[in-house]
Image (tube, rainbow, N blue to C red; front, side, top):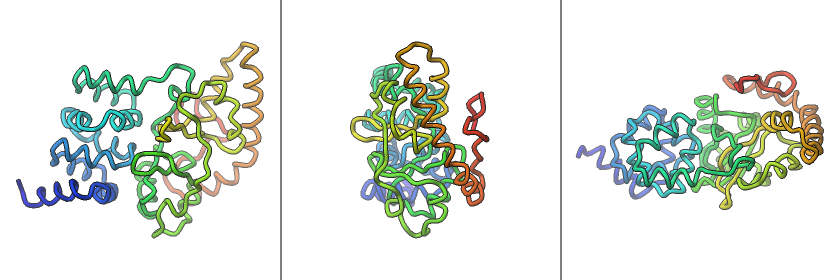
Length: 288
């Protein structure tokens, strides 16, 4: 074993959280190169401390067999969190590379009944660890602009949602501060098992365009967008759902009335993050 690889392996084994901080400052390609050099056990130890979104970005550059090795070593819950954040195509490719038994365990963890928040969640949204500096978070935002919405979600090293801040706040924050020091801790979220009715009438739609979704342990799964709920509302015809539809539309109109100035500020200070289409609705094909 090369001396440098031996040192890296020992560092990962003895200081996984510090190693994760180092890896999060590398490019995705460099991070993948490091993971490729580690054995599956040490790679899994490191991946388990990364934010799930960044873990996916690094793992996507690895051969499927190496990804399968890491997923085999991770606890089922950790593996499911990573798979939740991958695209459907990537997720199925990685599951196919696993043993039948392991893949089935993970599929069970990923499975939420239709009509629940867990089934509606969009996992492809940026979430970063609370001990990351503002400067590094700004770099991650620019590198992952396609995963940036209008809020940055903040998680602990166990992937539990602990806070959030909007992108303008991030860009104006003291660069040496940690996300944990500048984030808002009092945030609204939706349980992954919540049904459609509960999600539709959630009072936070009055202030937010997206609601974070968490499991029973507070682990961040992703977000539900207001646009998606409007689309569901548009397809709802029965008398039970229509009152919820009216409530959702009313809350949404209040939200958009106060948002346009904020979005103008975001676009001015955040190059690479797309402006929201005028009027609050995204493109019909789901692009942003």
